Image 1 (cartoon, rainbow, N blue to C red):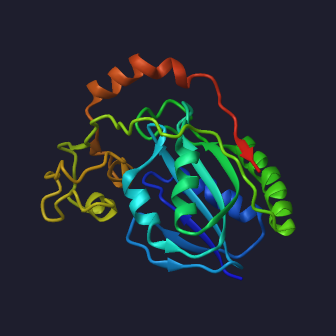
Image 2 (image 1 turned 90 degrees about the horizontal axis):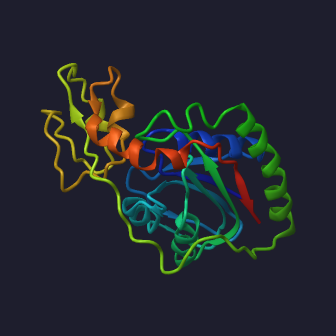
Amino acid sequence: MPNYCITFSPTGGTNRVADILCGALHSEWNRVDLMGEVTLETTQNDICLIAVPSFGGRVADLAVQRLKGITGSARAILVCVYGNRAYEDTLAELYDVVSAQGLRPVAAVAAIAEHSIMHAYGVGRPDEADARHLADLAGYIATKLRKGTTDLTVPGNRPYKDYKVAPMIPQTSAGCIGCGKCAQRCPTGAINIVDVTLTDTAKCICCMACTSACPVGARNPDPKVVEFLVQRIGFMLIDRKEIELFI
């Protein structure tokens, strides 16, 4: 019975949450990275843990497209990770996307990681307290998997909220060393591999994968736009949000 840990994690926070859950479930997991193209056919005996970040309260369009490469009838554990503001319709959309592919959601988790743009919020998360909480929740998920039931209700609206992502296309500063790691990490190929100062704005999805990949911190969104966001919505991110389980 293969188990698959399937993640879309541009800046690493979603991977960290998924790794904690997978480790706590005490199984061997095959890694599937939605940052690249994926084709996977599952069976009813398989288990898929599918983890994505919340993009403005939705599943990123690119992640939706990549998830369409996964088919079959596996049971699915849904995970959305957000930057301590809100996940809104992310779990509802993720549920619908994987169900349309034939998978059977049995449990869902909403967890928190450091905000990918406003790094002062959710800093250090998932932290030790989160890891303990996720380990506890894994026990409830394992129990439901053993029971074999697949009834599940997740929060969210249908129709979903409008998909709006702030235009935060990262730019390359003078400190760039030309290593090309940003271009290699970009899931859409938006960054020119020969001249990394060139970005195809039509391809960029503002996922910040390039900023986290840069070893010298030379690729960042416009700090004025970041400060505008802090002033506009920062108050929503101050109070510590806690992990939620739906089962």
